[in-house]
Length: 168
Image (cartoon, rainbow, N blue to C red; front, top):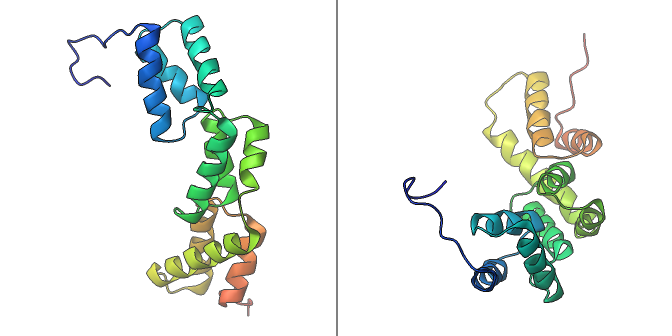
């Protein structure tokens, strides 16, 4: 974790820590959990860290609702993740249910479905499996791993023409 294992991390006064953590928060959106961990690494106790977090929130440098919105936008547009994966990641980051709900409103249904289709078509081009049933299953598993919902996956696969063959 530390660059030099023989050297202890630098200890900061609450004033120094506030300046450093304010820059840390200004650089990109952060969660309260990330900020807490960083403040602990600066050698602050829980009370000092709590006071700094409250101050950062008041000064709008730390806002979990804003973090959730930015996270959702970025991950569904850039990484083309599905709702389930995004929600799971936000929960792991310690974001509240309320902030997750607010963040999830950033997803546009049309654009979301278009992302699913794009990801599916790309995977279809890369897939080497010849058997249509196994091919469909592999694409479906991949999309499930990306966090897309089963009903949307089925609809998109049916549109692509990857319907399972009828048994003879």
